[in-house]
Image 1 (spheres, rainbow, N blue to C red):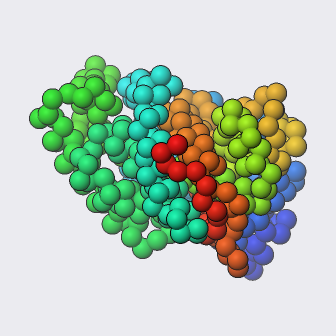
Image 2: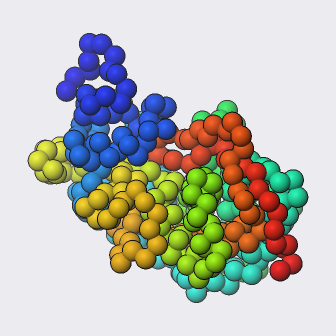
Length: 407
């Protein structure tokens, strides 16, 4: 499938089957419609964009790839196009057995029991952010709440970053999570530099019993962990949960604007909010896809994938596959099973899933309590990331203030 002699027409059947480009801005709005067509017409297909890569969209195939790390490697590349000298982002950039050692260190600090200790301060932070805009009756929800919240929570509760650094850190981390903006590279560099200084300072401070201490004291494959590995792991922890959580919050708010019966039901039955979180993650998870590299020749969906070829697996498509989820495009409370892949699957499944669930649950509880009659601002046009992230860039809303932070 060589390069066409004339430019492909975006989103037609030929583009889907031969020239699909996950980075195309044309994909941003009709995103789920396009993925549905690909599941039906070309569930495993090869694109000639970015040097060539495979695209996989059905639940069964996506799950197989995620679980079969021996065939589909993250260590050999998890972005498309692949950089010439890919950085080691840990533990995402390594495969088992080394990956298991890094995940073991991290997981102990993000169990349901561990993150439950952050519930009270997280609720206070959520209400503090709502206090900043609730009296205005309108805001850009992404800028006022969805983006600041997960970063501030992580830096303060998980890393115990100095309080005076929190606002600047969150600005850098948010910029680094928005690669379409001019400040993204500076944000990434500034954040990396801060993590390096932070790690050095923590080495000379009394232990706090957090994930930073665990990493500093760790051994990997029988040797002391290196400073670069500590920094790389913290960097992933920071970036992995910011724009992804922000994206789910933004998409959830959009869904509430378009379907006001959902927030009304959840206000009447707040016990359903944890179940609603799972359905919102399935429908509107921000991490749309991820790349893998074939270690060896293999067959998938009637196609021969060769060793060294890149594969992009679409979590967002798998989560709306009718073969796995009845009424896949509808928000349905009471699903018998909801084996969504919003946090991935297999050894590289997101280590921060319990923290993300806690943050989303508390955020929805307080937002639903304190904001009523939420609507998109008149004339608002919502734009989205393209590529690996499906987060909205802004969500301008109007609302009626209800409860107070003291309730």
